Length: 194
Image (cartoon, rainbow, N blue to C red):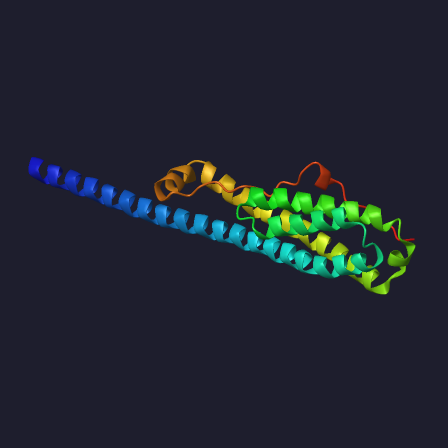
């Protein structure tokens, strides 16, 4: 009778251990998969920012050529835009992109101030069309930044909360940077050609 009790206690212990092991395996796999999905979502949103930054960067040469025709002696502003554009194209990390984007935005704002001195340029249909496209692209960049930061927040919260932090540390999941605008970028530049 004692042997039978020991055997049934041993079986119960094995069953409990097996159930806990299966639970931990499913929890680990599910946790890992959910973190991968959130990381991929953040990476996708990061790509959306890159796409819109590239779109803006592609508009700039046409804009600069238009300005050069009417305001050829404004080389300092034109050169600062070109340098900022190159820096943005070479940025790898999210913080580098944010810094380069801030510099480019500042240079474009200086260009808008210069344009105020050239009524012929403000009346140029090509320039006006490019500025409209640039304005639309700035809006898309703003939306892409917000979407990326939302995805980054969701991912970062997931990997930092218990019990997910244990799984995240086991598999090497790291927090990702937010796309943070500089203080200058927090104000939308005003474009007034009227």
